[in-house]
Length: 286
Length: 259
Image 1 (cartoon, rainbow over the protein chains, first blue to last red):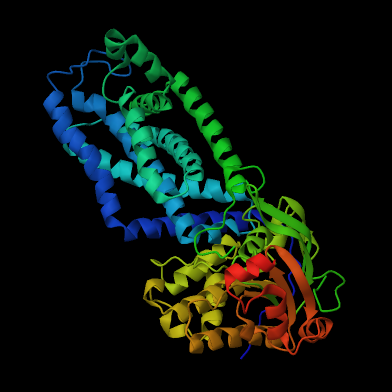
Image 2 (tube, chains in turn cyan, orange; image 1 turned 135 degrees about the vertical axis):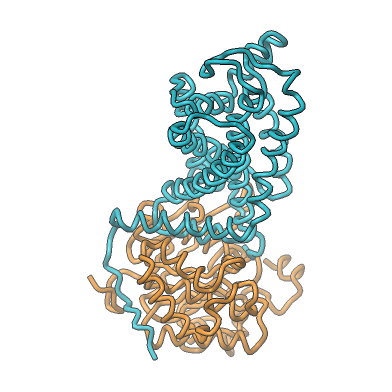
């Protein structure tokens, strides 16, 4: 038999439909991987739920929160901490995606992606979108559990928060993507997690309002202000209540663009870190 | 315009390509053509620069010097047009072990803009051709080394490339699996007219009717039809020529000292 594979290939360029096929293919593959790693899903949920059930409950009395926008009344500490936990889910997911990029690179799977004829920036953005889709699924499951714990934002907030989740997911995914280009081996990634995730999370408004931080340490307050995670948390906090924090939106948009451009440059075969380092993956004989 | 053996442009043109990792040069002034159709062997010992060359041809990263064209399309300037005409099998396994055979193939189809139904149709055809139909639903992790390689080759052909690149495709396989893989690839050339660049360090994989490019320490030492290369260097056969040029029959330290 023959494969009926013609040796002609006169096509040029790709149609919009083909771009969509490529994007959905990448999202589908990431979803399959996610489904195959159930423990990853559970871990992603357990982490914020522990903070909500144990940390927030334990510190409810100690860390009382005064009336600050977007809240119109005193809120329980669990309510205050929830947007930060949502952002934490997305931050971990962004880093997890970059971890999978490093894993793919070590295992060789990354080459399948990089030798696709679609523009490399498009492949990277598609990969990011796939990660964001997975993180949003995790967030909504978390919000559903939080609802049972009486953390109940207005009903329209569940929909209003979606654009903020997409944007924040892209921000953290871009940071992860940039980091993944800098890391040669999986072993190095653990250090980056410690030096990125925890400082970003703790030096932000996720756990305590910024006015409290300023009272105790003006320096830490300044660091929190420079931390994009702070603004992602505030964007999510306001969106959950159907409001837009314009300053947070502008900062999240700007930093997303900056990190995304950095990641695309880093993966550029001519200019990026990949090009400069350029060593074949393990297994290559040179 | 249909690409035929009479097309003026070669399937692959590597022109004065050089590359370095820091101060260490991996390729130096490498130039050769791979004609449309036919089986071309890129022959070199481990460390010759074969995988680096494959990485540059497939634009994993750009060559520092020189130019690479696939059917006349500059890989650096028009990577999309070049890459869509290439099918690639890297030395390192690139299949996703946790996905099924069919899922790996349809994922590759999507990466080439081929819709689901068409991707599955082509994948079914390929799996039939490579005697893997009964393994389509199995996770790749559960396949033998030879079967994984066949999946990778089937995958590389899914988007109907005109040129297939294979880097040490038989490394780590037993004799039977090796013969099986080479047999399949040679049939692609004879029955489907697909051009093949086959990188290997195994001299026994070269046939008298092949073209050969001998790469050693980042430089091309000889290239052309096997018979011409043998007569040009006054050897008995390609094995003796390869051994004389590269010191393949001597211990590594001695051959490096001679070079």
